[in-house]
Length: 474
Image (tube, rainbow, N blue to C red; front, side):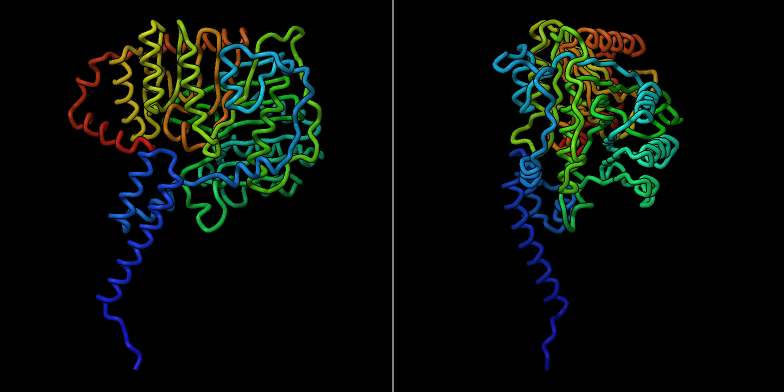
């Protein structure tokens, strides 16, 4: 007679299996977590509470991107323009760029033309107009594309160029664009274009991994025009949402040798997803726009595949570079301790440190944590402003003579978990444009007082502290 297990026996086996799996996962976390705090938190949860921790670990847990770095090496893509747009060999970059060049594993470019595009209408009207004039290729990468008026307009314009013989490649993030219908890109594919979804890993858990997302936003047309910044392709980014009202954001139109670096960032992501180059041959990039290139521009692509936390190092370096001005706009302020410390030191140096944050939430838990961190920044002497004219989503920074704009927020996701893209420039015209934009935003904002936290209801203050406990995953 075949023996049968009692309910107690089945339960015992299940408990043993859960603890065994938890122990194995804890070892994995110890070797792969990006911080000691993360390793300890995961290991303790997996060993003592495997029933509750195993599923979240599969969805949120650490992941080493050795394969991404290998794909970057193996892709063997050459898109560098000739050296006319780059510094001569052996010529050192300005002091604010030397460290960032090492982070980017590249060199600054010179003679670029940079136009600041404020908000969605100005940005997408320029992007769509440039796409309509494409002759050879278009590459597009957004974290989020929606099946709405803007998303369909972008798709249809791309499909029209594909039908005209233009090579079109689109990459969206699998989680950011999870709401897209499966047939959304069919018109583009039928026209000869290609659209793919980014996942941080392959296999069974590819779509279940919520961390390590591709948060980059960029468009390149014909190797001559590049666009990057903080906007996604959805109607709310045009200010059409009753919930948010005006969507305050920024993009930059790049012409010059820096476009090749945008192409490289896209091509590495595309190669990771497909194992192929997005375009067989890139046309020569127009290396020099200005007749006397003096001011450098650098594109920095960061992410969990970096050997160190390059996004954090970038911000810390930029903050430490400031001597009299440091203005930052970010929708989410959940900073790494190194950044919070650098801001405090900047205040002690006498720098005018200002932080521009939204006055309304789009993610309640992040907003609560941001409010608490903002209070701590104010106690250190940082001037904190709440943007009142709509929802602030711009990720930008100006120091004495440098300007930066891109996709990275000052939160743990951007700093440690996401693939991000930032532009750093010493271009005086662009710097003045961004400073002027900041001044207009400050004029339409309210400065927060130090006692605002203390005057908040006790329940709200408690919620802020609870939200901060989840800072690493917000």
